[in-house]
Length: 144
Image: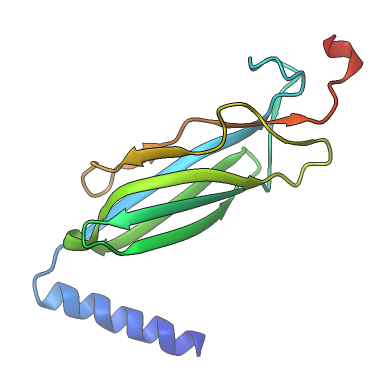
């Protein structure tokens, strides 16, 4: 079934090129970090969060709603990318953190509920979303 979907997608992509439909590629990325001391400033005690889940919801110029799920890598970076016809490119998006699987850093920091933005970049460019911050439930004593 998965192979059939891949072949169908490839055929549609080739048809769009044959019919003169120009392809458009966009990318959205950002970081997720742990603010260990909960002081809203990044310091040497803070670290990136690997495996944090982020959802990105985009509305295309044709009105279609696309929902993406991404996880951060070892550098705390998540990335969502898509290639589609120019007429269906992203118009506006919402990126929001879903969960942190870190042992201690599980509480969302203030201002990290989500970010709405318009996507106006030409094909091949990326949009960087501001950093999402998690905090520990209880601050370590060395922070006090």
